[in-house]
Image (cartoon, rainbow, N blue to C red; front, side, top):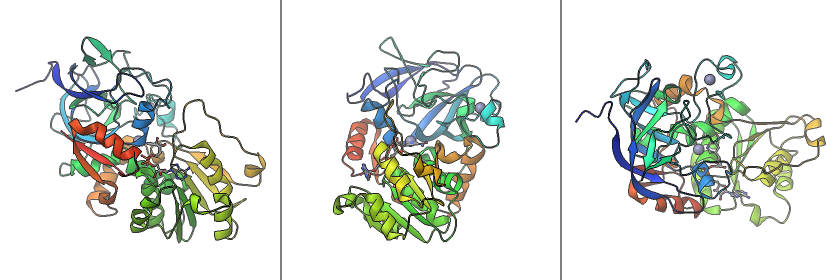
Length: 376
Ligand code: CND
Ligand code: ZN
Ligand code: ZN
């Protein structure tokens, strides 16, 4: 049946308010307006950033909302003026858009397109309306994507065509976890061969940082987590040593300083914990070290440290989506995965039917899963 131009009724996981489970509902998805596309989502992963909204850590998110920002699917229909994709194309939705026209998109050093909703959480399309309704109520979107639904509508700047043969249940992780972590190592830190790295937090993001450090040729990759169950996988992916701060009396930065004779070259915070951000900074060499903040800390939280820590020459930086310009880079990341440059299988720990989405969140909270991929 041709659904072009029609409202589609389908299943979606609606979060009516923070601190509640997601609720599987029938929603209506309006057709795409000009420069928008409607996507049939076929696989979507659960990332900690989705859970931050459920936990209420992202304070300004508008409700009700359809979460999800790591996915792959097929274009169902396109709005007027859309030229980069057509119905039937395999695509990845981009939580970090690339409009190609704004100040960031024309600045060679930036990747944070002005169309991005990160930190703003307006949760609406560019005409300030939503394409989702449920029980007569407007439902907001989440960081330009909303993938916990059978169908979603996104701006053309927030979608990119990928290889026709791409395995969607794998490449969905390129929509966030893999690219964010891998890019933080290779683009943001620019890890060099022979260097020493420390990765704090071994979820989907931290493990992807490890993959990036290994591809870059780091000689030591020290993996840190309070959950030692995460160590086996970290080692399989390239960690050379694993440490649990709970096993040490001294602060973790002192342990790392000692282990590395004065600090690591690169440290990465992949948790979203402001104290660990400072530990990561203290773990790096006082003059040659670089620390990358990858984790998302709760809204309004503050990081505090003595300026001397950076005055001596350390670099502190952060990035969204691994510093990648999403439209330019995602198709290549998919092709590199298909040609075996890296593999993501170890990140995809669980697979669940969409209706069991709350179980997927539970697995993440209990530290049992890396990525749960939901299928429809
Ligand atoms: P996930 O929860 O899977 O992993 C976090 C890991 O940190 C777990 O293994 C925890 O056991 C561990 N941990 C928790 N507290 C500590 C601690 N004090 N010391 C050491 N280890 C600890 O999360 P994820 O990998 O899906 O996401 C990680 C962060 O990245 C999270 O904050 C998420 O919101 C953020 C993120 C950033 C971006 C971006 O573009 N920068 C995109 N998506 C997610
Ligand atoms: Zn994410
Ligand atoms: Zn832009």
